[in-house]
Image (tube, rainbow, N blue to C red):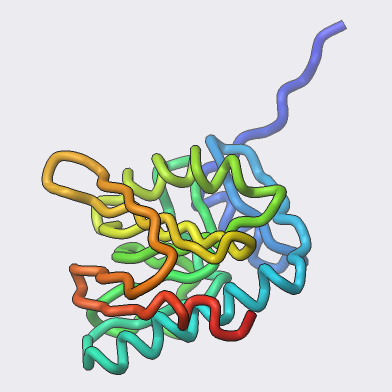
Length: 183
């Protein structure tokens, strides 16, 4: 007996496939993965992080935008993720856009089912996108942020549990308390 492999997709095929489909999905190495339903804690922290980033952009008067979950970040030809929030700078994207080509900051909020992928495949994947300067992993239980930052020759990591996050570029100062404000 032979085992048939699952059909693989490119990101372009995936985006066309997912367009009118209910639910949320991501693509990893050509394979589609459904995203699990969120717990209330996850949704609260995600909203707080989105709001904190948007407020920091406004306070800094930067030509950047925060996009909530639902936007796609293409890692390569067969991998695309949907972060919980992202920041890009420059001109506003078209209202019909589903993919952000040049994110500077990407954010994932940990949940029990995503912890390994957020710290593994997504960490390496997001930094394959040349525009990504910061990858924030928000831990809603421990109330801390693991901040991965692109340096000249390496990815620097720090764990922040109080104070503020300095995200430069683009020049954002985000009080950590604001990331957990609504939780």
